[in-house]
Amino acid sequence: MLTPANTSKVCEPLNRLQARAAEHLLRLSGSIQWTVTPMKFCLLADQQSVVVAMWSTPLMASVTFFFISLEASSILEHSLNHTWNSRQTRSEET
Figure 1 (cartoon, helix red, strand yellow):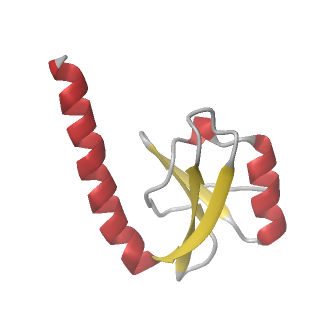
Figure 2: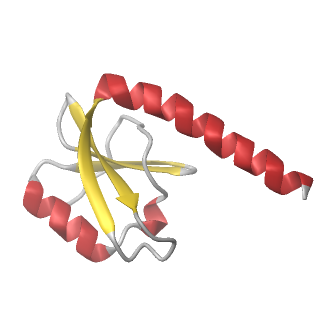
Figure 3: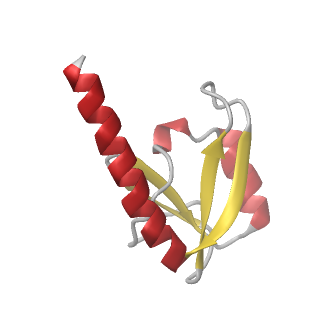
């Protein structure tokens, strides 16, 4: 069962995670946990890495999971936050 974690890392909004994807991740690791911030979703596999859920289509029909180090995820978080904020600013201008 997925349980809340105390750490926040960058991934995808929780409401986009499909049940089948969660089941697949549970099969990969019995210790996976999840954490949610307003616009982020992340699965924690262990203390050294995170499982990042990436969707290849807008409909989230295809899900790909990969592991990244916590150090890399910190860099990724900054990069994705900047990208998200830029998109929000552009959409508000239109």
